[in-house]
Length: 201
Image (cartoon, rainbow, N blue to C red; front, side, top):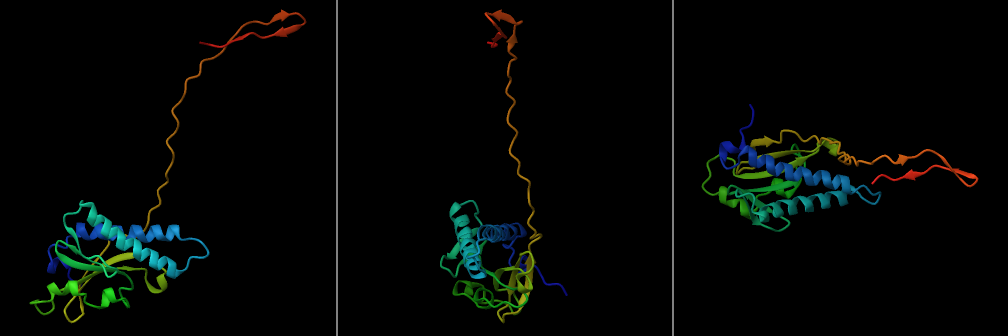
């Protein structure tokens, strides 16, 4: 039986908002992979940089004021942000076998949905950026909704996580009109023969 969507439990979690957050997380993921290519970079340096950039991206998007549906509950390294008042977290982890605290544990800023919740309702949400077993696949973003008992009761997955490469070409230079020089017949100047070239004006 397929899982319900997060919006079935929390209508504020609209697909358009989830897609926007997923895009921010993936953009920072790819930018980190593109930037950290030195032989001194490791999975650790990439992982910490990736997480820091993703956290700061969400923070910056909130401060921009462009997204009325976005707010920050807790601005620490254990970031909790809200989409339409619904507290969420994020983690670069495995959907199938998560190990990170952001996925496994309830943050105190997520407690508001748990109080007076109905049994089996989604009361905790976390965006998981997953690369599959051994981090061998292109990343995808999945928003998991957990019940109070910690069971996954709803899920949303980003439509496409495949990066498309765009051929960026410089615009061709504007043509410059050059007038032809006026050439006169040869004439003798002492012992030399010369061509008189009169530049066009």
